[in-house]
Length: 525
Image (cartoon, rainbow, N blue to C red; front, side, top):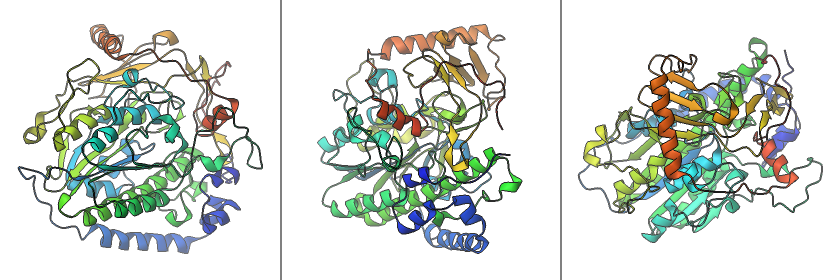
């Protein structure tokens, strides 16, 4: 079994306080594994916090006929949060009590899909209502073109004060998502400019530029909210914590037993650390929502909480995200809450996409629909008919991030587990597309020369049995849907030029480019 020693350098990604700097000097797992009293105290405090923070909510009324015209609007995006690791989905570990509380006063979409298993393309879709082929952001190194109208721009034109607080270099200002925001706070986190030389004790890139903790980001967002109460506000908060490296803050304790390393395989340790980071980010999300609802006054608060993509743990041979379009990579939570203005506790099971969020929000607050066009957002809602606004057979499309060359994407080592790499190397060539329609999920990568994939999600929700050969008509129909979608949405874009330093920085986040080597024969589990 691989050593579970935590190596220090990558921990410095989040080392911003004295306690965190202390943690960098030693092993995270080693440090908390000999603190059983701290774990007990954490559990007691967590239970108390739950009772105090979650048990005193006022009774939630059903939707009124006429909502306030301009509510405060909060958008929270979790990075790397797969839907089936949330308490909303019945996950065994209590990772997201905050999301459960949020959904009890709003609408939960139980089958929501990200358009890509990559951060920037999914966020660009979330803010424009356009698919990745239409907005042209096909990987994390791309930039959203100024020609596209973002949600922030639309709301600012209606009198909103807008602020964004992001926690990762991938969403830095230079990537184009700052369009329409009066305040855009990335904490100094930027994708390194192409001409910047990187050196120093941390190695070839400055790991401190990768991300910041959810509590720090939420603190800044709350301060901004307090300072901008004279206007209706649109606030976007991005929480990076579930993304690798899996380093929960020391204050989170070890609620899921990651330190019991002798009892678990390394991949199970990674899952438990991942779940701990989800729980920490969820706690901070609920702190934000509850604070804004209390402070919102008569305007009220319309909250939308979702994620940009999921995370794989060897279900299909890969640990991480970006290379596949399976359910664990693109199924995400999606909850909309607006007390007294949307139904409480409603669960909608028909498939939806992050592409639907902009038109849904427009419909809720009365923003006129865009003029009809092939690339315009396609779907709004009627508040009186939530139960049937999205039909089961509506196609939901997805696209793998664009790689700069063909080859093998190497398994990603986890520095927090002493450099252990899980899974197999994944061959990539050209582009891969997916479509979900009704019970069927279809994947194709024509240039990759791999078999087309078809899964019946009604009887095979984990996509373990490819039934493409048994259903050629279904394969043909769904392939034609993808071709029509691309003919309608695709625009010509050029991949940006990147320096070696930029490539290394993306590589440190798990977004490595393929190499030309033969795949390893057996996965490590």
